Image 1 (cartoon, rainbow, N blue to C red):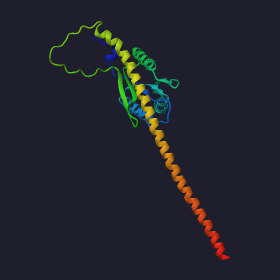
Image 2 (image 1 turned 90 degrees about the vertical axis):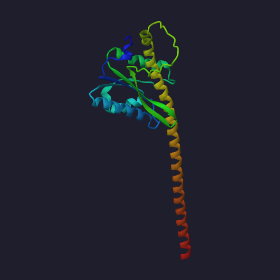
Image 3 (image 1 turned 45 degrees about the horizontal axis):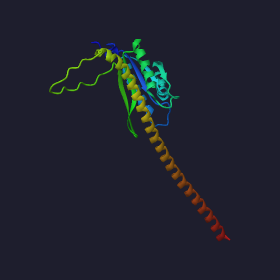
Image 4 (image 1 turned 30 degrees about the horizontal axis):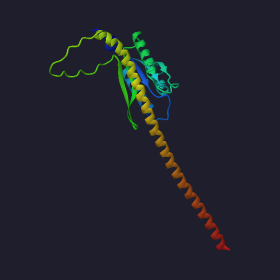
Length: 230
């Protein structure tokens, strides 16, 4: 009963805030478009069900993609182009902004969109609900004697401090996952581009050699025909 509102929510499900995290630059294949597509499909689904949607874009590429269709829904944009190395302070700034909007009654549910890094060639677009915060499933109690714990301060006070920090940590995790996924996607995209360029050069070289040989053969035929005519 003493849980903070960040965990329990407002009790409503009408206004949704979508925090879409993408990269600041391109040249990484479909990395950014996959995250934006997931956020776009989620937005369309919410709008179709009569919900109100607000979008915060973290990263230039996601903003460029989403503003084509949902420019009126974007309420803020976080620019990280000047940040050389993502730190917790960057995520905490975004987390405080989200919490501030919630305390002002700007939304009921907040969902975070990012790409979860699996491997260099596999990044999975992911949607994670931040507010209301969902607790993990309870672990089954073990048999036998159990100790009695007495907390100081109470659970409500502890959660009131941990939940805002957890939101910033989740955003920090999303930003780090994006950085890893972006680098992997860039490496794959550049490798594919190099391979395609090499194949194109080989095809052009073969075509050029064939044309040159055909021209030489034609000139030889003309010379031989002229000599025979004389």
